Image 1 (tube, rainbow, N blue to C red):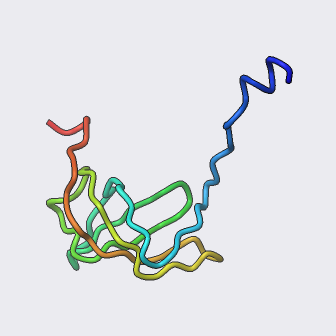
Image 2 (cartoon, rainbow, N blue to C red; image 1 turned 135 degrees about the vertical axis):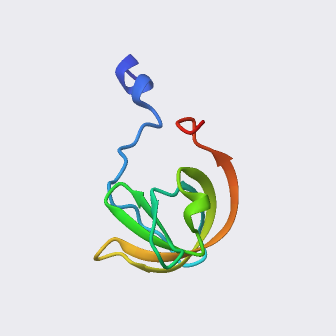
Length: 91
């Protein structure tokens, strides 16, 4: 085994459109909130609409559970579970 092979062992490329399944729980940052009280999460090119993630969750790390996902469009819906952390950008 070459040193190059050893160095790259375990490396993998990340996809800009991850595949998500209904029931998956993720820790993500809420980018924005709309007037309906739902939050928007972006994971690469994937967009999730998070129900009940209102303005209080924007720029916070939250745990969500995927409820719908369309792999073709890389869009889906998720439900808000809890806030699990703060952003390092907020004061």
